Amino acid sequence: MTDRTEADAALEDLLLFIRDSRGFDFTGYKRSSLARRIRKRMTEVRIGDYGDYRDYLETNADEFRSLFNTILINVTSFFRDLEAWHFLQREVLPELLAGLEPGQEIRIWSAGCSSGEEAYSPAIALAEVLGIDEAVERVKIYGTDVDEEALRDARTGMYSAKALEPLSEELRDRYFEPNGDKFVFRQDLRRRVIFGRHDITRDAPISRLDLLICRNTLMYFNVEAQAQILDRFHFALREGGFLFLGKAEMLLSDGERFEVANMRQRIFRRRAGETGAMHTPGQPRLDIGLGEEVQGFVKRRLLTELALESAPFAAVGLDTEGKVTVLNAQMRNQFGLTPHDVGRPLSDLELSYRPIELRSLIDQALAEHRSIRVNSVERRLGPEDPQYFDVHVQPMWNGNGPHTGVVITFVDTTVATRLSHEVKVKREELETAYEELQSTNEELETTNEELQSSIEELETTNEELQSTNEELETTNEELQSGNEELETMNEEMRIRSSELDETRAFLEGILSSIAAGVVVLDGEQRVRSWNRGAEELWGLRAEEVYQQYFAVLDFGLPTESVHDAIADCLRTGKRTAAVDVPAVNRIGRSITCSVTCTPMDGLRHAVVLLMEESPAIPPGAQGN
Image (cartoon, rainbow, N blue to C red; front, top):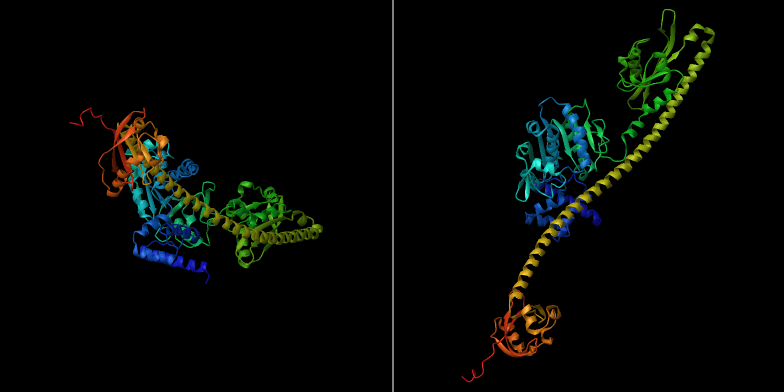
């Protein structure tokens, strides 16, 4: 077993241990980002092996909180990706409200809400659309996350001025109230936001939702976990409800249950007619790169339309639901149909029963898996103006799978009926046209297979791009989290530096205010402080003597005379008696300098020298 395989197995064991001991199931998370976050925490506690870290967790219960805070990257803000929120407020919310009864409750779920900013954001957006009073009556928002510590912050509704920077001053004043150096979300709307712990990979979803917000959360999960989560989201939304994803997430492969409301802003709508029962979709996934128009293009019926449009006879194409998907020029001209009839059910058109009942022919063709042909069908435009058609019902099959549609052709045989001598020619033309149609269908089949192969290659590439994009987004949020930590540390350092500067200025002020000379020596007896009194006494400025050895300084005091006093002070750790030393002050006058040596608290081997000029002794006083 290789080292990497052993590390992967050890990581899986660690994840199972976390799940069984604390109920946090990270097994559905992407292993690359998950391993990176766990390694970051292991580095902080100086542990290099997953097994050793598991032992550390068993003996240090508080470590779980630090680990979870590292794994769960709580990067969020009010109205994150402002352009997407503007589109939601301007386009989506009015459409959502139009589909509800007056006074009906508006239900919203913010999944992965972290510290609450993305749960309070829709509350503000709806209050702006409805008015605050109506929003208080109708809006109910559920904010969920797996991080209990983040949820505690969310429940307080209290944020710093920096956290509110994305909001305009007007919105901040309208929805937040000052509380010390922070701001609190207004209480009437706050009561409409409910926070609770919820694991979107395991817990039952909240139901009957009008809007589900889950932004940059799915990108942390692997494909299987994403499929399970999207299944729960589909169940949670009511018919026509909206799903709002993050900028790194796009839902395309589950198009049977979700349709695109705005791809750029990552907003999707639950399709009408879908049941609310939870089921496992056929490999839905988050994808990136393919546009919706490409999916429609690869459907074979669109290619069939192109062939039918150029056919020399009237033809209509139907999809699997019996709706008209294409009308060629001959069909429009002979039967009075228009492009507006495309998309209508065939049963709504006169063509379905006149000049012949087509619905029974279509059912027969599909049941018998063959084409149906009816010759010489009469159509009367007037008493003396009959027309005759050969009607051909051709099911279209996708290999051995279900049928993809039906092509119905009407070949005008009026002239052939009237002029018998042209019957043979017309028949040959029809047979030739039929063979051409069959040949065209075969070519379309071949083209479709080639397109399908290309689509599979594109899907593989898109999956790789999506995975890379999600990794980059995860790394970006990790960097943002680290940057916020550094900003906090910088602010603390700035405060401490300011306090130190203030303290230093205070001490220097004290030293400067002392008339006597004060000199501070460090453990190597270098000068660390030289106050103004020392400058006035000896004529040397502080910058001239700073970091110089005291013993080699050349000024009016013979430094060797105080060497013993300094040694006694360092040896005993006590203040020495004053030593009178003959000296010469800065103006060249002989004086007697009284030097006192005191040990300095808090700095090892440092001493403070206090130097004062002794008062002159009156003549004759010594004899007395």
